[in-house]
Image (cartoon, rainbow, N blue to C red; front, side, top):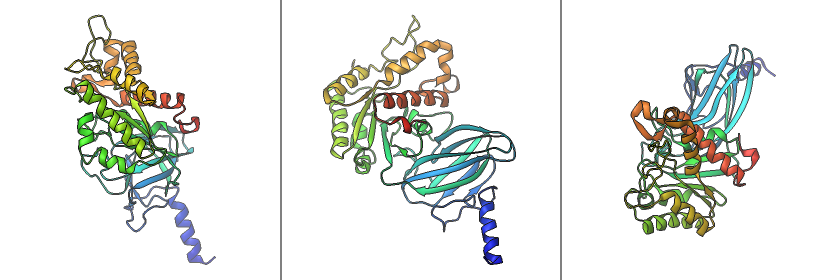
Length: 349
């Protein structure tokens, strides 16, 4: 080995153990090392990769005690906060869906390529590697509204935005949920189901939660819309899963969620969760009864403590969830998928 070769090897090794402030290199579409990263709190890394699915392996920790969380693209939670003691290093891995737009399908395009942010109280990143995921990588596709989507700004968070942090490498979450959408608009907008349908691969799980914006959709139209989504997913070889909507935090006088607003009964008297349950049984489609799980959780916490799951204090909003609420509700979804054998135990973090 020549002196020049030895020096190159030393520099390459150093890139894996110490953060530099060198901007991302457009000439390296993917690879390893911290030359793609800048900053310290947060550490921001950018890889100029085309749309696709990518495995990311990171080494967290350093000389000082640290606590690091990882998000990707538009505030998509990939790793929960991970603590490391001084001198301790830990390796973690996850799989990321990269596309344009990177967040909500009808929102801003975002930055081309893969964006990762390492935040938390005291973030520490020592190494990173990005590689194309194998073609056999499992995908979970999400169709939904603002309670599911990758919310672009704090303090909002959708449960689909936090689902990736609960799944290990080898399972990618492609969140195509979009704010303000109903069963009618999701089918009609070319940027939504017509586009999503083209991306569905054989074997993909496709979770469908639409109800919050079907305020004036009659029962036959609602059932027809959900049926069209299920049939379209199956036509592409996907595995549709119907999901009942998260409850709104509206308590009745007796301290339970017993009014139409809370339990998603619309202005025409259509009981959305009941319609979804019946349709899932009729179509032979797996069901995640998120309405039942979130109702139980909100009522157990009660009128005051349940505010922390929503944006009641921050925005006077009893429909959209906080990071805590989105994380808990994503956990309900992951647990149900595991319990029904829709994901393997090895996929659950």
